[in-house]
Length: 205
Ligand SMILES: [Zn+2]
Image (cartoon, rainbow, N blue to C red; front, side, top):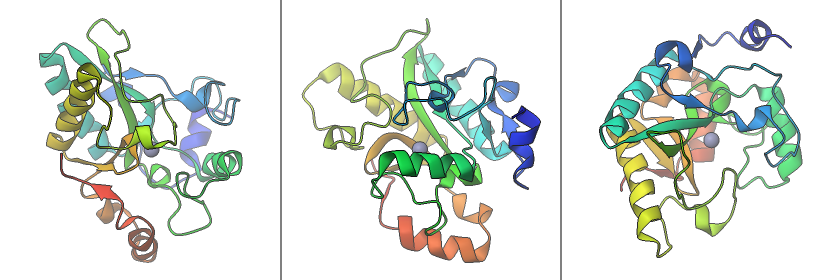
């Protein structure tokens, strides 16, 4: 499946994060086998696509982090509903992976959510609470562990994303949604999304 094909599946206007800020590091975890499905769910060369407003907010977060010798790495961005379906089947856990048939599915499928972690200015990974898609209590937004380095890294990421206009998710420290995501959903989908996700947002540090 070509890249154009991926974007053409939806009427959502999406742009490649790299085209807006080439310094943001992209490592789409569903493009390789290192994910909960243990196989590639995206075709080779898939770009990290988001709504233009999401991209410009990521530019702001990246600029903030670079002042502290850190950077953003994007683990996932726009996720087609077909891929959400495969993930949901692989996870068998509706608490963490949104059922594509229920509510509004995943906000990734609306181009308003990203999964992001922190790396240093030399592209090296830094200690974070968990790996991607670790659906355990250790992945909570409020870091519960005792490691001061992890605490400061996750806090820095959260400050950068909050100040750039993102909300987090209570159960997944890597998941961020633009604060005004609601304006991007059709009314009927919005109603169902609010019922499904309404109580799960984390906007306070
Ligand atoms: Zn996510």
